[in-house]
Amino acid sequence: MAKQVLIIHGWSDTSKSFLPLAGFLSKHGYEPKLLRFGDYISKDDDVRIEDVAKRMGEVIDAMIKSGELDKSFDMVVHSTGGLVVRAWLTSWYRGAADLCPLKRLVMLGPANYGSKLAAAGKSFLGRIVKGYDNWFQSGQAMLNDLELASGYQWELARRDILIAPGGNSARYYGENLVWPFVIAGTHPYANLLRQIVNEDGSDGTVRVCAANLNARGVTIDFRENNPEKLFTEWGSRLECEVPLAVLPTRTHSSIIDPDRQDGDNKENIVESPEEQAVLGNLILEALGCVDFKEYQAIQGKWQQLTEQTATLRNAPPEGARAEYYHQYLQINSHVVDDYGIHVNDYFLEFFSNISKRHDDANAYLHANVIEDVKKNSISEALRNLYFDRTDLYEGYYALLPNKTDPTLFMSISAASPGKNINYFEREKTGAEQWIPMHLQGTETSRWLKRNTTHFVEIIIPRRPGSDVFRLTNFTKLVKNI
Image (cartoon, one colour):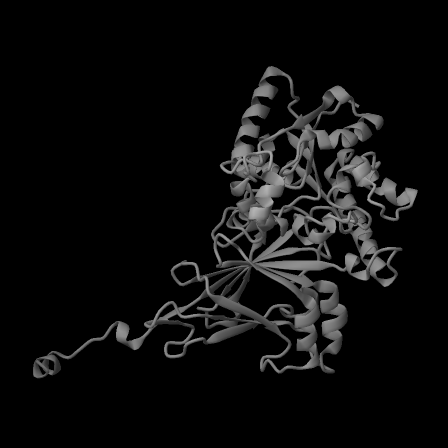
C-alpha cells in the first residue's frame, strides 16, 4: 500500500507519542518509510498556530519539489494539530483547495473549537507544570488561539466552515477537495492525577462538541424591527456533514493509540476486545475511503455509532457515570454595537417563558442544563456557554407545562457604556431584548444541535441620550444671552 501519511501532534506534545499509531498503521499495510512525523514548537510564547501553519506550508512545498513527498498524501492529526492543518489549508491555498496535496484528513480528538484547559495552561500553574523545561514558557500565543471562544476560532471557522454575511463562498472540503474525518472520545481521564481536569461530554481535554468540525453560525441583529430579519443563519461551506465518530472508552491520550500499546493509555477503562478494535477500524476506514460516495456513506455510518454511544447513558458500563455519555453543545457568543465595537459587559439569560417565571423548568435549566460559562481572557465580548443537550431534551422539556411548545428563550442586557449612552432604550438603563433560540418555526428546524459549536454574533443598538445633540431656535438663544 504505497500511500504517504503525515502525522501531526498537538500542543506540548512531540512525534514520539505517535510511535504506537505508526506501528498500528505499518501492521495494516502502510510502509513505515512512507509515514512522516511533523514536529513543531508549541510551548514558546511567541509562536502562533498561523506561524506553524506557514512554516509547514514551506516545508511541504519544498519536500514535494524535491520528490520527498508525493503530490497527494493523507494526514492524521491530534488535538491542536487539527487547527494547524486547517490554518495551512485556508491560508496557503486561499480558496484554491483543489491544488492542495492533502486528500484524507483524519482528526483524532481535535480542538477545532478550543479547549477549556487552554486557560489553565496560560496560568501560573500551567507555566510551572508545562513550562518547567522551557524557561517557564507554555506557549501563550498558541493557547490564546486555543482558549474557548477565542477570536481566532471565529476567524478560522469563517474561513473554512461558515459563510458569514458578506463572506465569500470558497470551499475547502468536498468531493474534489479535502475529506475530513473526526474521531473523538467521550470518556474522561481515569488516571488519578488527571481526573482534576475532567469534564462530562469530553475526553478529559477536548469537548466532543468542540472536536466536531461541523459548526453553525447566526447573526442576531436587535436593530431590526422586522422579526423575520432578526435571526439570520449563516451559510455552510460544506458539501456534506463531516463524519463524526464518538467513542465511549477513549480519552484524549488513548485516542491516538488504537491497540493501547503505551502503558499510560491502558487507563484501567473497562473495554471489550471488540470495543478496543473500533478506533483502529475507523482510522483504517477513513484512510481507505476511495470516493466521495463512500465518504458520505461513512458519515451516516459514524453518526449511527455516535448515537449508540449516547444510549450508554441508559445503562452505563462498570465504573462509568451516565453523564459521560450525555450529548452536549456549546455557544460562542460575540456582542458588538451598531458600530462593530465590542460590548464587554453584557448578560445572557436563558429561560422557558418570556415572563421569566421561576417554574420547575427554569430551575432545572439553570441547575442541570447550563453547566459552564466562560469569558474569554483576551476579550470579554467573547464568551462560551456549555449546555447538556441530553438534559435539555429529557429533563427541561419534560418539565414544561402541558401544551407548551418546547422552546428555549434567550435574553440579553448590557451595562451602559456611560451616562450619555444606553443600549436598546434611550432612557432606560439595563434594558433587554429576547428571542426564541431553540424553536425557529417548526420542530424540525430547531437551531441548537447536539455535539455542535454554535457561533452567535449579537448586534445591539446604541441609544444616545437626548442631551447628546440638540437644535436650538435662534431667537430663543439670543433671548437667553
